[in-house]
Length: 109
Image: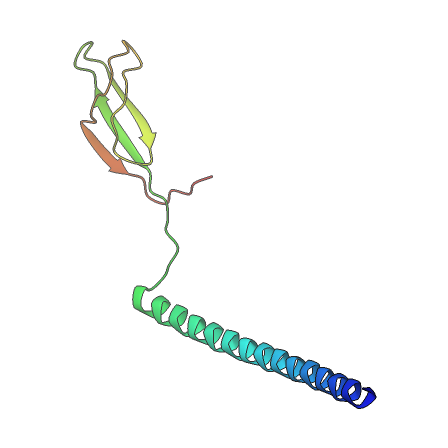
């Protein structure tokens, strides 16, 4: 009976050692795979930057000129686009600009 217990204990120890070795092997593989994936990701980012010439986008601003169709009053307003506005004099809504000029050297603050 004692010999059987020794063999069983020896098998248990060997099995635990094998599990530890496999766990370390899996960890090493996972680490190596992660390093490879990171290298691929960095390489793709470099390729995309070269392909698309990533640059900062400068915001635009426009002076829009309006004339109200109801009260015939003129006004201007600055916007980030050439959008419709409401008349500040009579409240007429959704008036399209007669013309728009892009502001040079605009810095959004």
